[in-house]
View 1 (cartoon, one colour):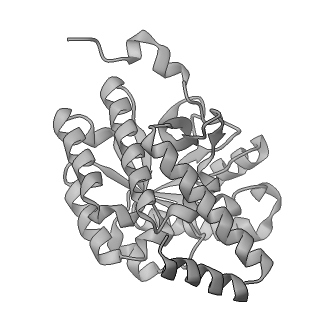
View 2 (cartoon, helix red, strand yellow):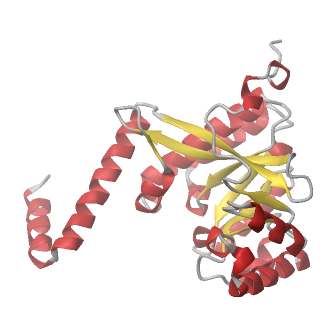
Length: 280
């Protein structure tokens, strides 16, 4: 670190309260840990089923959730680092890794339909686009089986670029899901222009919904909005049979959560020979 940078840190520490200093140090540690893990390729996807509400035994697709391992082999869930890296280049590299792993899974398992998370900030990242288009060229069926999930918060940061990007890939069969809908400063003016294929309702409104009248009203409104714009609806974080029954009755198309399956690094379909692409 330069003398100037060191002095700036000293000056900042003089005016920060202990909590702010601790949070800043934690964030630095997280960035360092994730950067190291990416350099050593200690990343993988965990797959969670998204089931049809009317046929819960039948997954409609899977979501590939990025997992990063520390040096000890402990899997660190994305929630522990994703907010810290969102605006950093490390976030773009995580998106690259998640997409690469997802495309490889789609290539190796022809019957798989998979959702992969991304930030709208990665749209302009050259390496991410290279990974995407290389994967689409290698297998013409992948586009129709790939779902890209964009968080509501990042989509609203750059709506014009996101809208153009989505239109170009939807023409190739790629679907888009608006993730964590309702968790941020939703702009319905933008929503009607995006043409998302899937609307995923944030789990904050879903957990214990069978006994929460306020969330029942809010979810009914969001389902109505999705139906108006011809979007499929997915309820996130469904954890009980009671919630699942209520959501099915409320008109949700798909359900996702621990009630239907935990994210697995090696789901059953990955090890079944008939689900793997035959050599040659």
